[in-house]
Length: 109
Image (cartoon, rainbow, N blue to C red):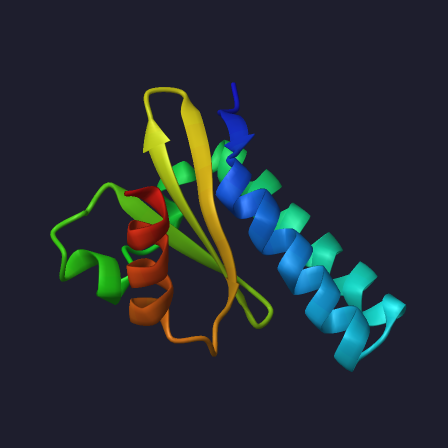
């Protein structure tokens, strides 16, 4: 039995921003390929939720319940709680994760 996946609003917004960036700088075909790979990575989590590694930047904050999988040049950061996988962040792997986490924390408070 696979886990249920919930894509949080923050990750939905990340996908919209990623889509806009790729369409502006590359092509619609590149976006379709990227999006398909991200969806496949998330689908794989349903059967293997512990497959991802704990992101170094998040581990330093002692938040070891979060994991990540790589999908091409993108990171999918998620959390497993019971039988549900919560997708928190979808971001280009080249972005500064510490800066992103700081912005997210400031936006929440």
